[in-house]
Amino acid sequence: MVVQAYILIQTEVGKAADVAREIADVSGVTMAEDVTGPYDVIVRAEASNVDELGQLVVARVQNIDGITRTLTCPVVHI
Image 1: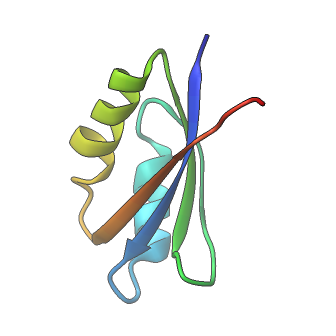
Image 2: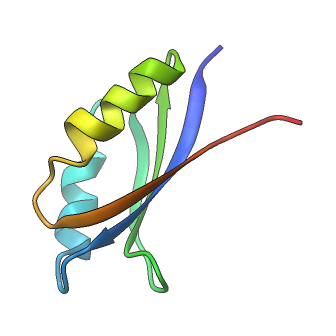
């Protein structure tokens, strides 16, 4: 089963659109949109397991220039 998550991202001022565009090209990202509110970009991502999801966030997403903070919210099916 695929593990899915929303990644809520805060960026440097004026960087939201650039960050969303760059993240959209990352393998495993299915959606990336710049938004208003306490977060600047919301990403939907998927991976084959939790470890792969963690690697996606730490190794690929958090290394994008302009990101100041992330919050990963795994999707659960209750």
